[in-house]
Amino acid sequence: MKRILRKVTSICVATAVVAAMGLASLAAENISGNGTVVGDNDPADPLETSLVIEKELRAYNPETTQVYAPNVSYTYSIAGIDAQKVVTDTDGIKATTKEGPAGATITSTIEWTDDELIDASPSGEPNTKDITIDLSSVTFTGAGVYRYEITETCADKAAKGVTDGAIAEVRYLDVYVRDPKSGESGYQIYGYVLFENNNNIDATSTTTDTVDNAVKTEGFVETDDLSADSYYTYNVTVSKTLVNDSANEGHGFPFEFVFTKDTNVTGDFNLVASYQAAALAMTDSVETTIAHGASVTYTGIPCGTKVDIIETNDIATAAYKVTTTGADANVTDLLVNYNETTGDDAVEINTTAVGTAATANFTVAFTNTFALISPTGVAMAVIPFVILLAFGIGFMVVSTKKRKEDQA
Image (tube, rainbow, N blue to C red):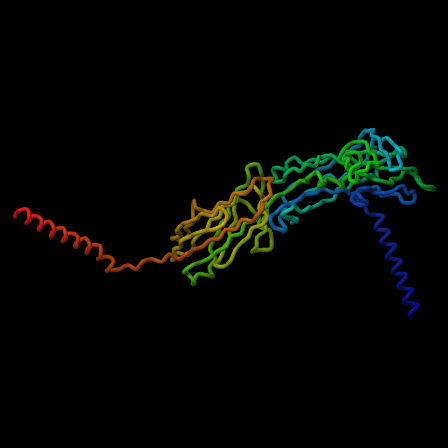
């Protein structure tokens, strides 16, 4: 029985290994492997005819959190380029690049949408999408190094609140091709290298991350000297306190948050609200209620967006003195009537401009103090007249005495 179990186990392991090898052979090569160089000069191991590079969007927020992405899309094209640049390998062997033949295709569009959560942090969190290059329809005309130019286009990133990075919109792909190994037909790919610049390549260079200033890269991503496209957001928290009114501490007071985007930014965006798990769609404003001792946080507001915070008193029998503390908070108002708001005295938060990281969250504390009214009645109504009568009598006494003195 043990012998049978060992045989069955061996067969299962072998099957799993073969299956894994089969799956690996169907997968696209990834340019991020092996120091941004894919492949080697091994005739027994030709590479796949598809390759994956990356597009990176960095998201910033004062917290390490998740925010909803902007609605931004990028389009890509690939074409052979007759660069005729000199490529020198580590052994000093030289070759001149050839123009990449037609037939190469690339993922035409990638996009982030406002229903997609992305990672954000104070230092900028990288979020990446895959771009696939397919060379299966290319007919190479011989062994050598073929160069392609990859172009990225995004016409409205600024209008979507995305800050253009220092990364150029062009990349250059060198495809290394050799004669087929014995018994096979067709030229075979044995190497890929992606560069930022269309320069000569000298692999004997002593620098580790650049080859004669061509700069190896994994795609349209951030490097030591270039920044990626970025999305800057911030958060607002509003808390509520009641004073002198324990009976209404469980009541949720209506609050309205009015968002005014930068004039150069179009379209709506989604926010993460602390009081619900789903996305909060932002149009012109959002409304919620906040009770005594509670707070509400909106996460992922694009920088450059102004926020007005307006409280409403919906308790017809109560009057409150409203004060606020926190960022730009200067409300001192009396909420008396049903549905009366703070009006022009609403808290207004103006953030840093689009393209600038917010260094801290905005927190505003609203305090509603129940306004105690002085007792009123007969005594209070009569006292003013008593004072006036006493003043009049006193004036008459003084006048009479003065008249007698004058007559004497």
